[in-house]
Length: 541
Image: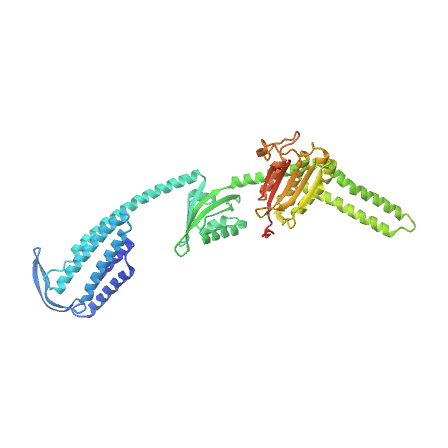
């Protein structure tokens, strides 16, 4: 009886997913107590004494039944336990019915009804036999056969449905793998509890593994390039802690010692305690995309270098003048010093002044040469903190002589306290230099007194810095305003159409923005917005 009742209530609890746990525990505890006491007392827990037995005919068979006995004082506990069983089954079935799904209500009606009926009949039959002294055989199995039949029918139905779902799942997996393979993706799943890893054949091939190879976290980690291993681990730990999706690109080293770039994207699933249960996602081979991006970056650097060389060619005459002045001054001072040294009593103070002039002119020439060397050098972007005012000052120093030769008034201004930006000094100098030279070309057809170019640095509205280059020319035609940053588009008779395009690319590579507009009073205005250097806050609060 203990095993039958305990198994029944536990099955209801597990299969329905409902039922009060305290009620289930009480039933099992009471039946266990009755079982133990039944072995310790005579004749058993149900009867205090049995006074007689007799035989009766039932369905053509002679059966022995209890004819006379005295129920034990504790029999009420067994009756109370039977009542608790009925209450538990009815409560669990009612909770399942309230979920209001067709499947749940069918289970509540079929399994719950059959169990409740069997338990009701068995309890009533037992109590009549014990308390009323009815001379009837012990028939507890037939009602439970009805309950077992209902359970068998339901479990068989679940088994058939599970088989059908299994076939559908295998079909869906095959279709999903086919779609992922057609898209160049590999699928993978990692179970944290069992440290079990699963991946499709394309995913294993991307890591240089064969389908027959043992698939473990260690084997995959061994293929990741050592320079990327820490970054990959940090990315997944952060994603697992936050529960968000993560994507990371890294290199894997194949058995032939070649490198391949992979992009892995995944999402972690956690339990109610916040622990990671599983991580699943996709992997994609992005080697060609990375190589194309590197080639584009190299092409951008080559175009930027060509643009700088072209600009310096335009400034060649003014730069020659910029260098010629300090060199001529050095020569004159050196000749003057030589004449002074030929005197019997040379003036030492005058010599010291001449030497100071030579040093100053030499420094001035060296600065011009350094700027030219940096602009002519092929180089990658080298981000570092940079003063916008110093950047503008370098450009003005290069174009000052050319502006004088063209009779262009070049004015510079800056708001106080403009913060540092993060960028490459040479490439950003090229951007400002292109904009200044374009502005000087735009005012070339104006009368000399109206040729004006202004440079202004200020804090931007979105926590950055703006460098503004404005001219007093005719402005930009509205019909071509949207095309001025396109490659090879130019409004100049002899222009190549690469200056603004390269400048736009450089600014975007710095995370900034370059745009143009026409000023209300006439002329064009170009804005270069650049982000602040790391660790620098907006001085405006």
